[in-house]
Length: 141
Image 1 (cartoon, one colour):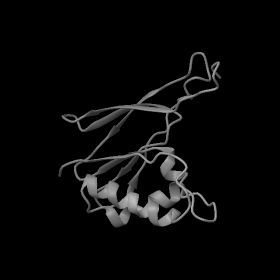
Image 2 (tube, helix red, strand yellow):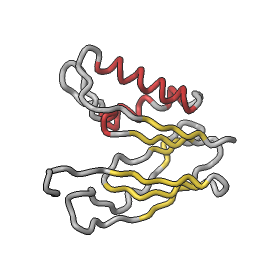
Image 3 (cartoon, helix red, strand yellow):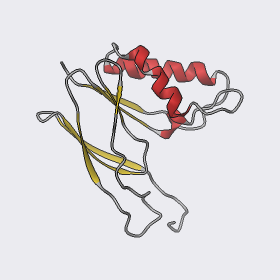
Image 4 (tube, helix red, strand yellow):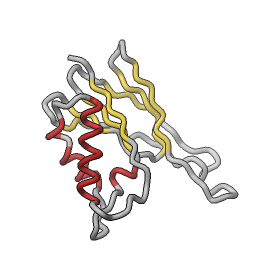
C-alpha cells in the first residue's frame, strides 16, 4: 500500500479497428463484457493483473480479444456492479448480464442509456455511492 493508502484498478485498452481486435491490460479492474450480435455473452480472458499502488512491481499481462462484426464490447466501473437497492443488495455482474440481452439492438449510446436507467430503477431512492461509468463499442456488421 502506498503512503496515503490509495490504490488504483485499471483497464488499459487499445481498440485495433482495422484488425477488429481489443488489446488490454487489466490491473484488477472490472472485466470487459463482449456480447455477440445474437445477445450471447462471449468469453473474455481474465489474464493476470494486480492492483496498482499495493505491490512494488505488479504482475500485468497483455491480452487480446477479437471483436467480430455485430458484437458489442462493454466497459464499466465497479459503481455499476456495486450499485445497491433500498435493501442494500448489490446489482452485481449477474444483474448487468441479465440486463444486456434486452438492449442487444440498441446503439452504443442507447445501450449505455438503457443500463443507466436500469440502475436508476434498481437503486430507486437509495443513494448512489460510487461513480457509474459505461463505455460501449458496437462493431459494424
